[in-house]
Length: 143
Image 1 (cartoon, rainbow, N blue to C red):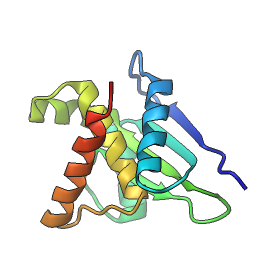
Image 2 (cartoon, rainbow, N blue to C red):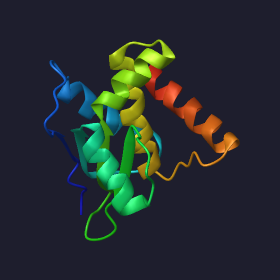
Image 3 (tube, rainbow, N blue to C red):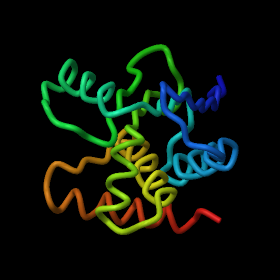
């Protein structure tokens, strides 16, 4: 059975004017395919700090702000499937801190979440470095 190849974007009480859904969808599919996986059902949910903090507390037992949390779907889906929650205020703040364009930081966080679903980890320095290299590679593929 072919994978449904469905990637949806939802904005929960936040906005990103002009967000390029189709370009982003194609880029994510390309990354998943290059990683040797098959796209399944992915939902990218953009939210605020409070919403993501609530998820971080409830599901990960972390009481800190973060920019992205991923939840893989574990059953009844073919292909890489899951939810990627992204705090847009964190993305914008991180862009200022790292002195990069808001859009570049947004795409970095999106691919970071997808890489987590693909099994990449950033729990130690070596893994973080490898993951950042992958992020940079996929960012370089954006036109």
